[in-house]
Image 1 (tube, rainbow, N blue to C red):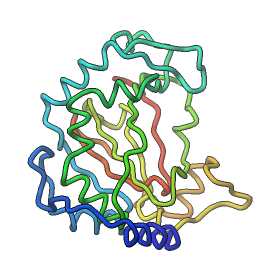
Image 2 (tube, rainbow, N blue to C red; image 1 turned 60 degrees about the vertical axis):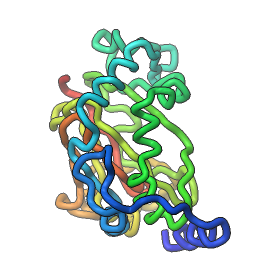
Image 3 (cartoon, helix red, strand yellow; image 1 turned 180 degrees about the horizontal axis):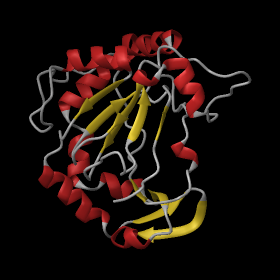
Length: 239
């Protein structure tokens, strides 16, 4: 991780950084100065902002989702329309068009929020580049899917992902789970390879239960996370 941060820092030196405002966001609610958020992100690997997106913005995004189509990565022929998600077979469904997601004005506003960009830039040490804008719908399922087993992402030299809950997420609604500090301290099993899934038992034995964060929160919760650390979705039991 130190090497990745070194390379990202060199890119920042070569190409410069942007003068994003560092004061709390005018759009995202409950934000602290970006330097403080970035410092916590460096230490913990995650920064959580409960209910940061206004409820009316969440409602507009959900309305825009109704006409979009989604597919299940493990059953690619299983395609649903957002408005019919309640009738889906079960599991996680990913958008078939990231372009349509980014076309939603509230999504664009989140992605270009100056405070968010300042926080991410501070963490990376270089100007952030938007690589993807994804959206998925998860419905109750009796089967645990691949993304619901602990793993790491390797999307670039150094990166973060920003998750937004559009619904209230409690313990039974498939909350995101993250292992605090794991981007800085990677404890992997023997014969481990990149993005290989690891068991809950390995995570608990290696990091301790107090570091496994089950991130529940109201609609509009924002999770800024370095997903090179161990994380997973969880199976939706209801909702």
